[in-house]
Image (cartoon, rainbow, N blue to C red; front, side):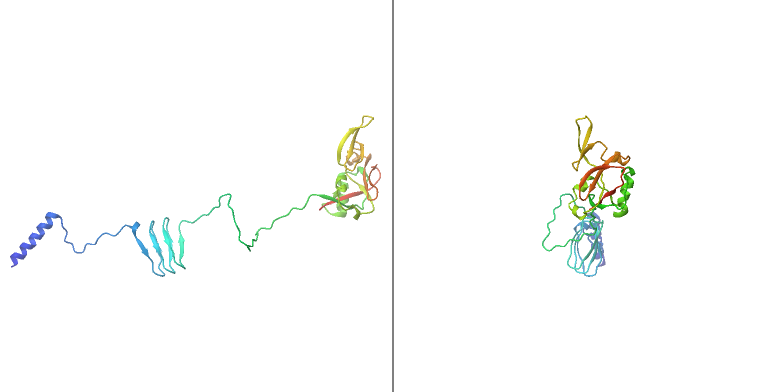
Length: 239
């Protein structure tokens, strides 16, 4: 009997040797590749996924994903993605707002003050016409603030409400609109106010000589007068 068992055993061993059959009972089949793995997570499980893994999550699961991972999440799932996501808008993006949309600007819009000057009154101080532009401007600033200065005839003419100042008179700077030669072949300039005179004689030769200059009177309008007589200054401020 033992001889038969030994013969059978020897036969099996011979067949195994001939055909390369392994009789190791503890061997296991290989695992499937990662790319075809389907993972379902139970609650409160933290899963780190490798690329191309399809994951379906149940509630309260925290997942950290690497690139190219397709994740289908159920409610209350916190997902942290790597790498960081950067969103940039391209030009020509149209935004359509539905009713009752409130927009709040974080940065206030700054509105610059107008640089348009208008007549505001006459200085208290009197100066002769040759006192210089700086002194004439300063005469206005002492009464109407640091932004005030001597008016031009155009600024006075274009001030809408001149009736607020009913008395007084003061120097005003000419604004030439045209020039021509008179019958004596002398160059004459026409001011915005409508006055005409020989060149430079409307501004006391640049407010440096006692020739003649333009004076604005609240009652009489514009006139040319002697620069050697001290006058108040017509003062303008910005709107």
